Length: 184
Image (cartoon, rainbow, N blue to C red; front, side, top):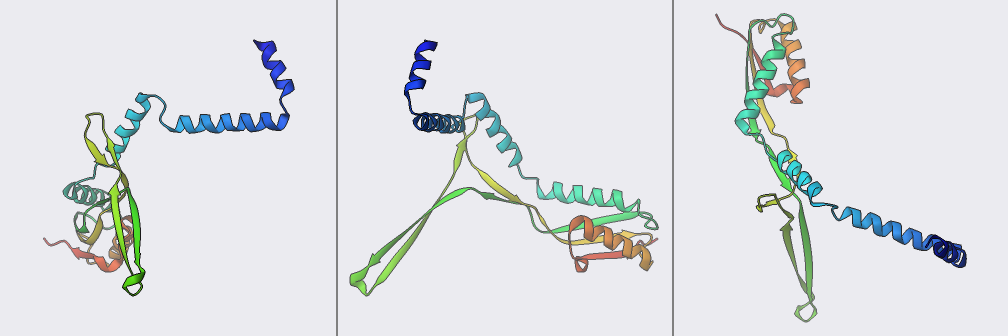
């Protein structure tokens, strides 16, 4: 068998051999991208499903308030602190879709044309047989405003530190942050 392969290789032109090997390589790459065994596909669909699970609005607000409270208490001069965060909109998923456009030209009607667009979402089947749309991206919630009530709220230096911390951490403009002195 090995002798026969050697004989074929010596008879075939080197250019043809390179083309054949290249075609075989491309074919192998194409076949490997089709999925491989069923186990790897299940694993990837599970991770897609897990990453597309949106965090609830209440959970996001609660966690953000807790994180801000924890970090602001460590800022010099802040003292006791309470934080309130409001959202402009909650997280939003954007789904993968395919769009087909068609144009019907009606020359007999004065050159008018009619354009139609058809959008179909890409669906995958999970391990339970349930079809789900493929999430392309998830937009994070947009923060509407932040209220900070702290012991050091009357001190301009402390307010500056708090404002800098909040605007940096949450990437919100300073006009959406209000800092007040904590009452007795």
